Amino acid sequence: MLDAVLKALEQVPSRPFRAVLIKSAGLALMVLIVIAIALDRLLSAGIGRAEHWLDSLALAHGPIAILASLLSVAAGIGLLAGAVLLLPAVTALVASLFVDEIADRVEKRYYPFDPPGRPLPLASAFLEGIKVALLSLAIYVCALPFLLVAGLGVVMFFLATAYLQGRVFFELVAMRFHPVAVARELRREHGATVFAAGVLIAAFLSIPLVGLAAPLFGTALMVHVYKNLVAG
Image 1 (tube, rainbow, N blue to C red):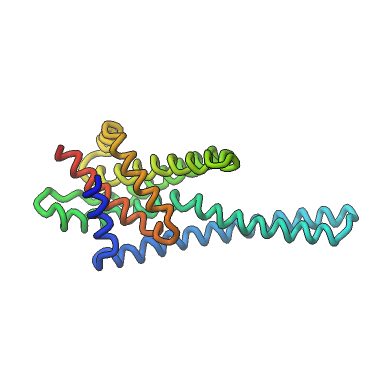
Image 2: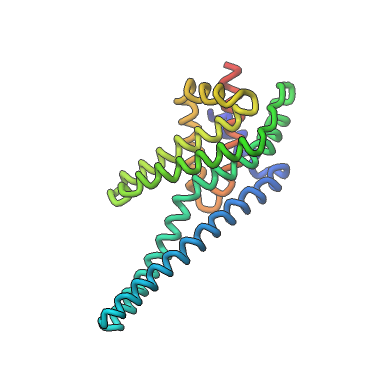
């Protein structure tokens, strides 16, 4: 595992990966910004309606205005926190679009004599990315209440992220060599190894800004993990 991590970390900042990094990080940021704008407008509209309703009750305007301002600040902080929570789901979605480009570069550099993986149909890869992204959101919503419990929520969120990131990256890489059902069976058969790799991807993802390169690191890491597993 350590050798796979070092190889992935070495290749992420390399020149061949930079173009992919710019595209994947740019797309991830764009998705997060669009979601943030949509949520901001929704929250602003809700706060505005609540303020108008309270005004209609002929209550003191000063305290209402202060309350609305506090809610707006809280909403802004909530949006920042939401972006952190959404990043793993967005990463899964972005990875599905760039898995072939990244995996192909890793295979050519480190496994030039092995049969190359088959490019995934874009629709199939994107569909898998959407499935995992939606599953991520569902799990994170369930874990959200536990964030109010010191430490427990953070641990649950990290473990859920590790499981989902390991799952999506391994399956996307394995699907270049096997049908979907076989890729999933391989992931279940080597669940402990895949989860351990997912923990490393989740740790990488948790680093501010650097986490935007998670699709590159995750895919490169899982190519090495897959190759080691099938070779063993």
